[in-house]
Image 1 (tube, rainbow, N blue to C red):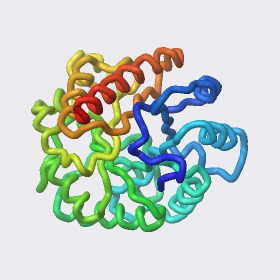
Image 2: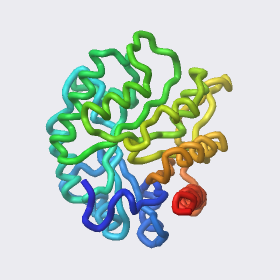
Image 3: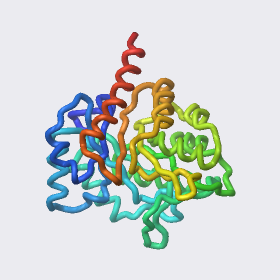
Length: 284
C-alpha cells in the first residue's frame, strides 16, 4: 500500500529503525530518508511502541519488513496474523511491504530463523499460492527477499533466480534484493554474485537491502548477522546492481551491536550518494 503522501519512487536511502534510535529518527531531516520496521513488533491495538511508530510515520515514510509469514511452509499463512498485519498496514500506510523466501513455522510452532527449502516444482506452486493469499489479504503488492545460504541443499528443480522470476510472473509480486545475502551466499556456496545480480529482472526490483556480516569461529563461513558495518565487497555489488537497474529504495540494516545513530547515517549517506550519482547519470 502506498501512502497518498509518498511513493516508492520518492524514497532514497533508509534505515532499519530500532527503539534505541526513536528520538534521533524523529528529529532527523534528510532528503529521501525513510525507516523500516519488522511489523511483528507492532501487531497490537495500542501501547507505547505503536504510538512511537505512529509518531515516526507522521514525520517519515515507513516500510514493513516481515519475518514470520513463512511463505515457503507446507501450510497457508496464518489468517489471524494476516488480519493483524492488514490492520497495521491500514493504520501506518507503509510505502513498501516485504517478506522472505523462506519458512519459519511448522505445525503451529514458530522457529527463530528463516529456513531454506528445495526449490521444487511443488514448492513453486505452494509459495506462489501463499504469496497470492497474502497479497489478497493485505490488499497490496509485496516484495520477496532472496535468502542467505550456508550449505548446499539437494533437490532443486529451479535456480534461485529463475524461481524468483517465476514467482514474479505468477503472482505479480516484486523483489527485494538483499545484496549482503548475495555476497554471503556466493562465499559460502562458491558462485558468481555478479551473475546472480545480472539474472534479477530490473522491473521487478522494488527495494534493496545492505547489511554487514560476520565470520564463524573457524574463519570460513560468513554469517548474515547484521551486526557490523557494511563490507566493501557488498558496497561493490551494490554499485554494480544500481548501475545495472537504476536507483531503488535502499535500506541500511543493523540488528545487533548497534552503533550510534550518526554512524548509521554515515552509511546511509554513502548509499544516498551512490543513488544520486546513478540518477544524475540517467538524466545526462
